[in-house]
Image (tube, rainbow, N blue to C red):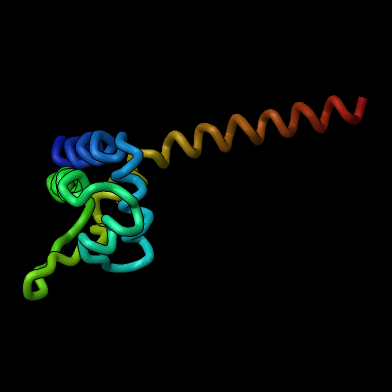
Length: 111
């Protein structure tokens, strides 16, 4: 994996380590939202939501656009695709292990 992709994955995992940030991404997955709406839905103080959004933006996990006095946030999918690509070999390894376990259990049932 090239160094820039590794950095993207590392930064994404670091940003996603905080549960409130994952909650923010879950809300943004449903569509763009202004900060005020995120504050209301999360029940977290506005300064704290803004700090979490800054971390997500620094990790390039969210995009922001200015609409007059409001900042509207949306999920930026590319870093999540990098995380998904990084996780792919682990998913394959676990799928293979689970397939072997299933085969083993089937053989045990046949006995």
